[in-house]
Length: 385
Image 1: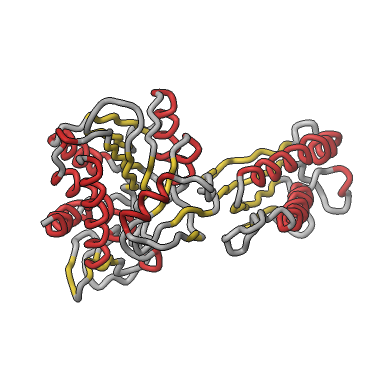
Image 2: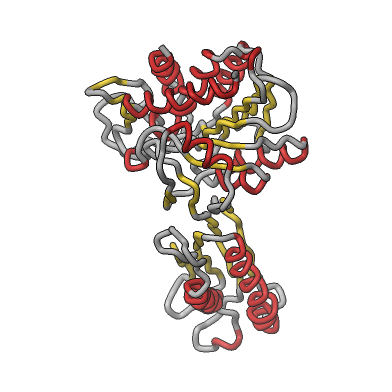
C-alpha cells in the first residue's frame, strides 16, 4: 500500500516544473499543505527574492532531537535533452518510473510523504522532521538558508537521512564542492609600454599558478585511510577569460575555479593562502601603478563535505534499517555536510542511481522505491514502539 501511495504522490511531484531557475513556491505549498493535514508544525524560509522557499516540518512531540528526512525540490533543466516522453508527466514502463526528478530526488520525497501518511502520529516517541529545500542543484543555497535558520532557533535533530539516489546504499562521506569566480581589474594601455599599465590577465595567471602550487600541497595532506578517490582535495580551473587584443594591455580578467575538499581544514588552507597572496603580493603590485586596481571574488557555492565519523548514529541506524553490511563514499556533493556542521549525525541513502540523474529519460526503478518504503516502514515501527 505504501509503495502504491508513493507512486501516486510522485506523479503529483513530477508535474511541478521545479527547474532551479524558476520558483518552487507551488511545490512547497503542496508539501506544506500535505504535512499540515497530518498535523505537522511547519516553518518556511525564503530566499531574498521571495520566489524560492524551504519547508521544515515536524510531527510528534515538541522536544529536542529526533529524526530528519531531507530532500531537495529543484531539478535540472530539460532543455536540449531528447526525451521520449513529457519530462514533467510521470510514465511507468518496464518496472521503471520516468520523469524529471524521479530519482533526483522527488522519489525519496514521495516515499517520505507516503510514510508520514501511514504513521500513527500520536504514538511517536520522538520528533520526526522533514526538510524540503530549494536550489540544491545550484549550490545547496536553500539548505544553507535552512541550516542557519535552524541554528538560530536551536533546532538540532539527532539524525538526518538525506535521500539522494545511492541505490539504497548507506553513504557516510562525500567531498565538499567550493566554487568561485575571481575577477581582476587593472589598467589598459598600449602593449609597447607594459609598465605603464596593469595587466589583469597576467595577474590572473599568477593567481592560477598559486592554485596549481596548492594542488600539489593538498596531495600531501590526504588523511590516512581516506576512502575517497582521489583521496586528496582537488582543485580545478574551469575557465580563464581576459583581454581584447594582442596589442592591448588587458584591463579585465576572470577565472572560474573550484575545489573538492576531503576535510574542512583543506578549504581553510586554500582560502587563507590565496587571501594572503592577494593582500600582500598581487594587490600591492597592481595598486602601486594604478590605485584603483582590484581583485574581487564571488562565491558561487560553498557546499560542505560529509566527513566520515568514527561514531555516527545515523550510519548505525540506517545500516540496521536496510540490512547493509558496509558503507561507502561518493564523488557527488549533497546537503548532508551542512546538516553535519549543525551538529547532526548525517547519512545519505535513497532510491535510484546517480547515473540516471540529470539525463534525458531520467527514471527510478520501482524496486528501488519499494526498498526505500520498506526502510521507512521499519523506521516508523521504531519511532512508534
